[in-house]
Length: 208
DNA sequence: TGCCAGGCCCTCTTTAGGGCCTT
Image (cartoon, rainbow, N blue to C red; front, top):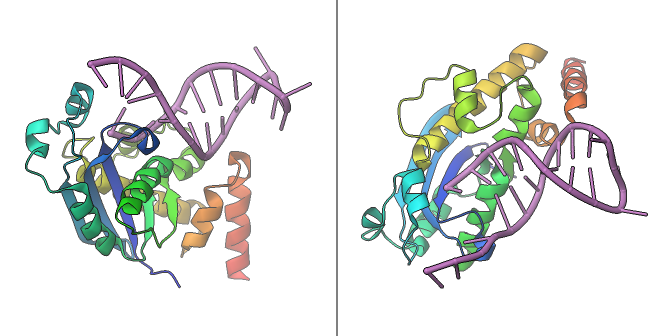
């Protein structure tokens, strides 16, 4: 039985692909229980090599900042304890799940919960958004954002706020009081044209 | 130092190509 909490997480990394040798340099996460932030986690980690200027400019994380940071192994062990068996959420989860799996595999740990993706859900629920980048969606939904995008904790916090807004909008549009994680998992795989029908059928089913 | 991915999703599709997202 999976825990009811969900951990919303975001990695900053040296690049796009752990299979090509890229490593995590920062993890940020918030733990939600019943829609309320109950805990958070943020840490820089030293990937064991210098990061390039693109990543320094993109994230604002510099080689000077990473030099005294603890190793990826130390940080990720603490993060594995933090997430426990919680379900997981990220904006473009395929990216963050690859890095999470890769970093945990290096320390003989593994992901226990199930991942879902706010990008896939937002493409289905906010079909009129200009695009589905995290920052665009935060603006699109008028969510207050006081901080720097492309830092792990801030992006995780913004993803969490977007997620709660998504759940609110699904509840409001389809008159669904409780949205189980299982419904979200199905929603994220449903073709866009069939999303309204899925939610309508679900609403009918739980009321009967 | 230089190299650099992968999953989703649409369409002029499925014997494929290219844009979107993440760093």
